[in-house]
Length: 256
Ligand code: PGA
Image (cartoon, rainbow, N blue to C red; front, side, top):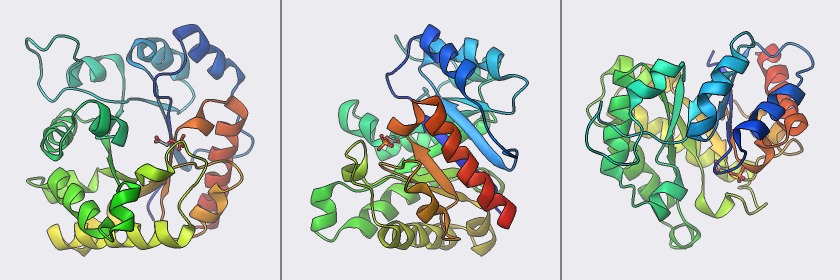
């Protein structure tokens, strides 16, 4: 059975002090060790958070990275800088980065490749805009993004991937996708992975839903076997709401 994942994406929120305050307040009720719990924080908070969470089983992730090992890339952070800290995950190709920082399918491919080479777990984001959905292009777009990201990986590498289906129109809007729509696209993504590799790889890859996930709607997404967890922005910033998301995912683990 695939292990559930709850990944918080803090985006450009929280100073180091505020980030540490979050962890001083977050408390999980019940057994949450069946959930891969990740907080993807701003770069400057990563060293403190890795130290803070050492004994807890919570993993700390970055929200982006460069694909090169080192070099003249002013302002960038390399994968080995992240692993040297103890960071374990990196969000790759979030739609905000694609929209505002000119990330392309090709940069997403390079970063995914590089993250895996450095034993980082990439959380690769894909998803369509509202315009693309209304034009009936969701599947085509999502398949293109997935295929571009996984091109050239070995089966073993592909199995280590986490994919996140995040329809752009659902991010930060309070308007999540319906469970039916999310399930439909995620099933299609799994099929796209099977087409590129084989059914076994497709069965192992974790695929998350993201876009206005909250404590009061996460259960419905996790009720389907197809969705392996959530990538959460807004609702991951508050300690009690984040803890609730992890607890709901943990109950699902207990049922499995
Ligand atoms: P949201 O963001 O949960 O605030 O919609 C999700 C994301 O951007 O990953």
